Image (cartoon, rainbow, N blue to C red; front, side):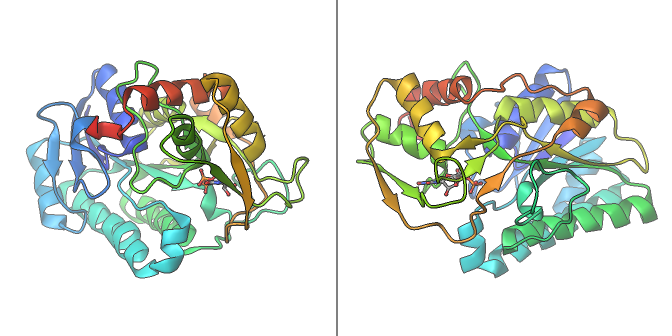
Length: 327
Ligand code: UDP
């Protein structure tokens, strides 16, 4: 198939694009490089453009005879969304609607959308199932939920087939060390801990150790970025007119901040100095996926189920690219 990958120069998008290409699909990356990296895109595959440019998107879809879209392009930082909600509604909501309109105009009706755990807010029970109420607690979560609703309505009215894949904590890197996580500034736990191991930061601040969890630190479900990529491929195969898939992508295993740090100590052999800081606003104590629906629907099985091998792939990337894609 001919696939348009928005945000394909970003972290999850670049890994998925590689999987698509390896599976024999013709891929085109549509990215404005505001957060993505040119180096993460295969030669000759980048189309620089804005999501808001509906006419350009529609033109690309017609010219490249696009069969399906994978939509990764979005801002994805909770704190930033609280500080600047307009930026999140503009890019994530209006940008996605522009993309959907370009699809409608050019007759493309299949889309895989990057959704998120943040659409659930603070669920009362764990693990989280897809039929739990979606009550986001920040603009980022809302911006993604609005698009999920738009997709459902476009599916009903215009025959779109879609998959909304709700990622838990994307982590790790391709084992060959070519692609990895590179955010500026970095705010995610594993890259920050590994930057401490590389001597680029003095210590890690644990955002709160008084949560109602066994060791007092927040629990998350870290899922390898290549496992996310393989789920996208499987979802693509099942997209037909009117199909609506809403699936959690996680391992079902919860790992605390302290357990992540311990795994990083074991993998890197470095002492990781830590200090205890304030809780980060908007952090729920625990987020763990029940991903049995994705397993049943897609036949998907994450290859990485333990934190250590995930950290190991991330460590290879950070060691070989201490300044990210810049070298
Ligand atoms: N975290 C932390 N110190 C840091 C960065 C993150 O203690 O410097 C914690 C954060 O509070 C959360 C977990 O690590 O409980 C994962 O945070 P991350 O930002 O990686 O992902 P999120 O869960 O926000 O999507």
